[in-house]
Amino acid sequence: MSPSSSFVSTQAAILAATATVVVAVVVMVWPAVATTVAGMVVAVLMILGAYWWGSCSGSDVFTKSRKLELEVEPQYSGARIEGDVITLDFVKKMMDDFKNQKCLHKRYAFQIVLQTREMLRALPSLVDIDIPDGKHFTVCGDVHGQFYDLLNIFELNGLPSEENPYLFNGDFVDRGSFSVEVILTLFAFKCMCPSAIYLSRGNHESKSMNKIYGFEGEVRSKLSETFVELFAEVFCCLPLAHVLNQKVFVVHGGLFSVDGVKLSDIKTIDRFCEPPEEGLMCELLWSDPQPLPGRGPSKRGVGLSFGADVTKRFLQDNSLDLVVRSHEVKDEGYEIEHDGKLITVFSAPNYCDQMGNKGAFIRFEAPTLKPNVVTFAAVPHPDVKPMAYANNFLRMFQ
Image 1: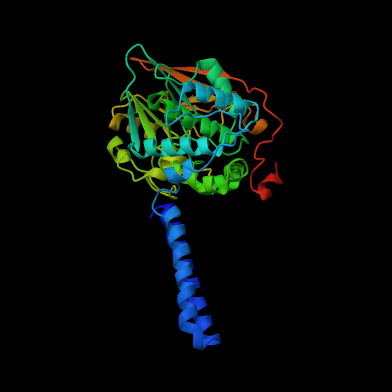
Image 2: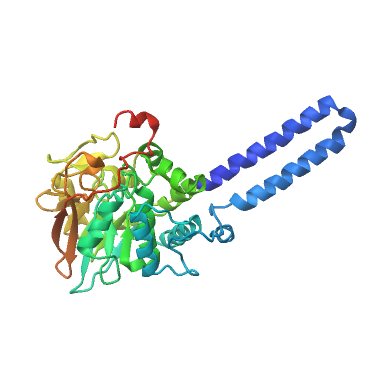
């Protein structure tokens, strides 16, 4: 059952229980008029229930008609989408508005997120990416709501386009307090040109993490409660891994607690759910490499740690050359491990405004796909602290 259908069932049960209680009270207090009054009450509840059900039923938390009902006020001076097409001019204007701490109208935010949801739904859990000879491809790691550092990546490496494609490898949100700006920018580029940008799910694209580490509170503050459920639904549509030219395996977390996992196994994972606490999907999002061979417990308490021998066998079993993953802050923005067969890339410099690390991204050139790592420093951002929208208890320790 999807998160939204579960929510629907709960609300339907509440309506039914309410009707039952009201009827019982009427029968006890006014037995003479019980039939008439109870009938009226039940009718009213059914009408309200039908109205509510029509607006919330199914896996679509929001319908196109509801989006179109959001009128744009005459005084709104921000970026606008004309019709159904999201253009580069719109994305540039939106990013410039975000840079100046202006908000995007909710109507256009709905449009971006709904269009992204439809595109992501149609993808397999593992996406194959073809990079033509002579072309390049850029992989970025965690951005974690650091919007101004995302803008710097685009300054250094160019905007996403068909000729300059990117893969952002999970953890777009949380920690940094500009997560809404980050996710809307990445989603808008995806809508503008699906082959310009690819998106992998990270362990922070989940309800439980968003509730604790800031994204849920930020969405509620900058957009609305409605968007909290919508983003949760879209995050469940994100692919879990990508393969570049049948050579490079890109995943947010890491590898598995068992040998023999094939790419075909990953492709068939039913990802349309919140991340489970064990199994292949969990391990793809949560696992980390370790210097020792074999496998060990995870320092995070979820997933596992895996050694160079595990990486080597996985690559051999699937005729691959390299694993690229993210998920861990690195002093230089990246780290090469496991005899050169595994690279961690992390793209949030000076993580949480206190780690002092560099950020990095990797450019691959076809046909060799030799990784070229580019590092960069953090850039200034407005005086909004990391985790400004996080759980109050956590903020006590910031």
